[in-house]
Length: 194
Image (cartoon, rainbow, N blue to C red; front, side):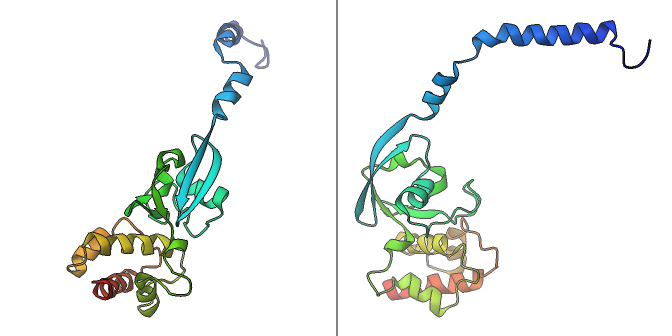
């Protein structure tokens, strides 16, 4: 018998595998049913930066994707998409959240603020101005999330010392290593906003 000829054992294994697939096939959901389950949508209203946006979204769409891809507010960044880097930080009812970890449908009726909503016309928010004065950014990718966390940090009153600022800003990573400048920015903004 050559190596290319099937052995009895090989024939039995292949036969068993085919039988298992054929037996399981009726238990698999209909393709149309599966597609319908995935594309269930919800009509929602999101109040972002004082403007109401009505959207029809799949229930599984994250707030981050709704903001960037549906509403067009691309200031909020998609960094890790796992809640580890903080680039997607926004404020919801004044509290900071990582928008990649929450569903858009869960934020109806809440006040959402993104980095685009910080400035008032040409007047920068004090945190934005402090970041510019203290060079609190380099590449700028993490800056929107850093700004939103800094605003929350100041409002929460966690600016008593540099160590406290570092602790409360620790959920936002800066790959360029601008941490001393970020801390200085938060410290200065806290003084101006008090």
